[in-house]
Image (cartoon, rainbow, N blue to C red; front, side, top):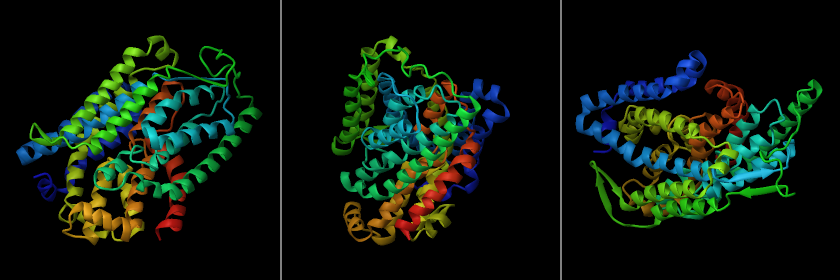
Amino acid sequence: MEHSIGTQLPLYSSIPFVFMLLSIALGPIVFPKIWHHHFPKISILWAIIAAVPLLIVYRGAGLYELLHILIADYIPFIALLWALYTVGGGILVRTTLKGTPLVNAGFLVVGAALASWMGTTGAAMLLIRPFLRINKHRKNKAFMVVFFIFLVANVGGSLTPLGDPPLFLGFLHSVPFFWTFNLFKPMLVVAIILLAIYIALDNYHLRKEQNAGDILPMGDATPTGTISGRVIELAGAYNFIFLVGIVVSILLSGTLHLGEINILGVHRNWQDVLQVVLLVLMGVLSLKFTPKELRKENEFTWAPIEEVAYLFFGIFITMAPVLAILKAGNDGALGFITAAVQQPVQYFWITGALSSFLDNAPTYLTFFSTALGQFYPGMEESAAVAKLLVEYPLYLLAISSGAVFFGAMTYIGNAPNFMVRSIAEEAGVTMPSFFGYIVKYSLVFLVPTFVIVTLLFYL
């Protein structure tokens, strides 16, 4: 039942998803006041426009697709983001460091290293506010935030299943936990190139600001002005206990086998329900034990996570027909795409291109299944995965790196991208538009970097 609708859906059923993306891209530019006040309504409107035809034409099967994407994907997705956002917002980094090119690069390196172990969202939420504070004296900060998104919110999450949802899906489908360390070389190449570009850009802008007299008074990077004479001080460090709880809840969902539960016709494992409960619990405990004064000092507000919740509700619902078509493989309206994927280079670029706009987790799973079907049709999954890792590991490497790396291509490629952008805008940084981000940064810096990765690893 889950895949049958994908074989019947026409390609034009993806139109609401296209208009949802166009609304996100053009709304803040064409009608900024209307968008700012009414984006939740616009998101829900496109969700309704996508859902109603599914319910009318496909009835039970259409309802199942919508319920499945809400229960199996959206609710766990938002629960994880909310928990990480809430807990991360309870950790205040006070520092006397100032935003020089090398200090900023150090922040990016630390954030990228943390991302594989506490998730790209966790690392981004922990460091984005102090990163912005140490650069308060700088005039040009948008490029800094963009490279933060590149490295901390995406590329850094490549090494473990904890880092990014697609890799966790692989773990759930018999890929060993530490196999993802095989992504270290491609990740290192991308990170080194992007860091080198960042340092060059930061030096260029710093000199330009100094020559123009645009450097603001340095002040202090911490709101309190004093941090006991230390270079870095953490307040609310007990929230790391709740971060560990979040990590444990994710691992438990992949290791426990507690049986199934039927939720409105959607079959889920009890451990998945337990994961959501534990995630919410960690966030609630963080709110209970973290003083409001600390969150205020950390400039914590709910606006970024609210924006993500509303916009990704529209994205997930309008995306449901597209994902159903993709899951149908060669029998769906996008079968020409899955049929054309034969070599690692194709897996890397097609998985990546779709992950830039669709949820990268089901996109990863689609091409993961395509690779298994290409080499081991009809074989039981765990046995097929074991053989794939030995005989054709480059294919899974291409799928994994494509799903993770290309999440940096757009604001919607990975959820923390949107939250980082929102936090930066709250702090007064003028961020590029949806298309501006792609044209000015992704196409200029990411695509050439991915071409180098292709030449080194996937040809």
